[in-house]
Length: 192
Image (cartoon, rainbow, N blue to C red):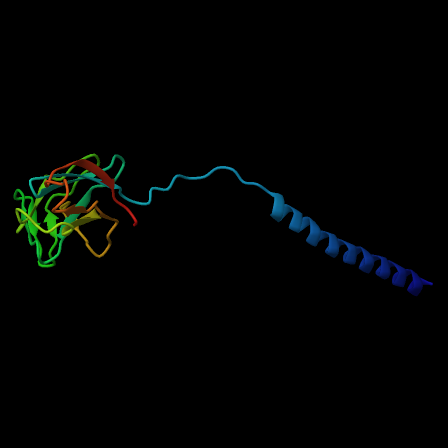
């Protein structure tokens, strides 16, 4: 008789274990599917720069501004055009030409700070050209967060570019109404 009681207790225990195993899976699925979480953190994923440009008399003047709440950044810029219309650069001593064709701004630009203008002049522009003839000048710029040596001196590490952008290009038809003058435009940098 004791064996029969043990068998029945064992059978009941096994059935209870089986029922619990099946129901635990359903309960776990319910809670993992319908549980909500609130809260969060704002992530600042880097710097944001904004550009402004003025195009007048076949010269494009470019200024790059670091946005509010951004870390100090170093800036470099470069213009591209066809070989028919070569470009020359002029700026103050803070802009220096690099071997890679970029012009580098020597000081880190703080939040809400701006570079001095980098002026790109479009050369060999004819007085008159055939209708439909056009050119295109594209200015690109990149920024990298300022890094600091132990002495506190800031330096640029161009292997970790944070923000890059292509400014609006200047496209003109010589036979059209564009006389080499344009309004100032703002363009935000970022992933393109």
